Amino acid sequence: MAKKIPTRLYLAEDEIPQYWYNIRADMREKPDPLLHPGTLQPASAADLEGVFCKEPVKQELDAATPLIKIPEGLREFYQAYRPAPLIRAYFLEKALGTPAEIYYKHEGVNTSGSHKLNSAAAQAFYAKAEGIEALTTETGAGQWGSAMAMACAFYGIHLTVYMVKVSSGQKPYRKALIETYGAELIPSPSNTTQAGRALLAQNPDTGGSLGCAISEAVEKAVSGAGCRYVLGSVLNHVLLHQSIIGQETKAAFDKYGVKPDIIIGCAGGGSNLGGLLAPFIADKLKGASRTRFIAVEPASCPSFTRGRYAYDFGDTAKTTPLIRMYTLGSAFMPSASHAGGLRYHGMNPTLSKLYHDGFLEARTAAQTEVFDAAVRFAKIEGILPAPESAHAVKAAIDEALECKRSNEKKTILFGLTGTGYFDMTAYMAYNAKTMTDYIPTDEDLAKGFASLPDIPQNRGMN
Image (cartoon, rainbow, N blue to C red; front, side):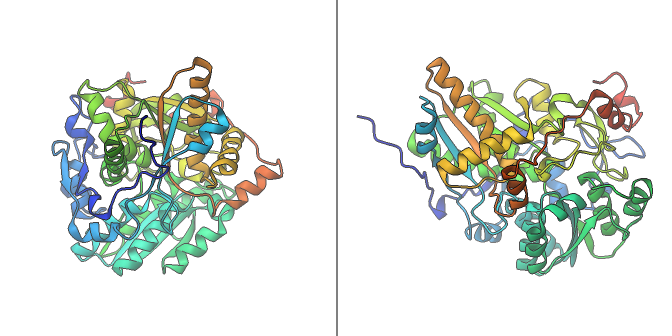
């Protein structure tokens, strides 16, 4: 009889990866480079170092080095909450009556409640090493802001967080957590920046967007000496830092002889999805794997499934480098859905290229059906998922039920990116049956697409 796989597939502290994995190194066709918006030439390190810290810039521009060393001091910080558990969902399998094996990588075991601390700690570590005294950032649902506040408190760096206004109202305890760690939190759009004032002049009642919050954070960073900007998703150095998720998962699977057939992650800017799939997609890029990779995004903000593959700005004020990605346009204003971490108009350029080339699938889910899955999971597995993570939960349940219908035994892995204990306003709305679904019309999307830059690289693209 085969040995039963334990419920928790743990690694030891000394098995925490020593390197991050850079997906781009194994891609035959690389993602298109960032472009300077003035010259339309590939952005250089000098172009980016006025905004970002030097080491993350170096990592952002490196498409050739497969393994990048994790600094030893940072690995020591990681040991405070890593390795994160990989859990076999025996109770969920039984409740669904599926022949599938279901696993989830639980990244919500640190105080920030999500995977975001993996990159927050890295970026704060590099800022400290560079002598940077202050950082700025944006946050949607608050996971990234919480993680960055924790990291900056540890390394003694002042932090200003621009939090999307609608999310700051929905999640007051996120604000309290961020301020408890000593960071300054400003609802965005605000009157503290030109970008914020301009958007408020156009629409005084706007709930804001991640694109607008990025504009404000970048403006503050470049206007102050000794200050830099950090971000928690979209760019490639963030995916690099998050690859520790997938590497731990793969190491645990290898330890127990498990190979996943389907890997699922929620998708907003792409950080957790890219981090989870990174070492597994390496085999697929080499033609040695048939694993399916599924990105799940909100139907209210469908960057992959209804966006355009084009160069676009990363922010509303159009101050960032141009990024070729799947995008709804930097002017797209998403609805006030509760999955604030997925309310971003664009997708990471590496994941966008993988999706464009057919290595990655994508689907959408409406808000109420996502919360149906979240509550079902919480009742069965005992963990309340973050609204973002619940998108992956729903897809995993759907795939497991498909295995039941077809009587196929497949191994399903999904990323439980964080817990929902700071998202109780969302669960209150679900319980009260006041939660609604919003799906943008083609006319709504056209307004965002109209903001795409009219440049030669975009002409003829779709």
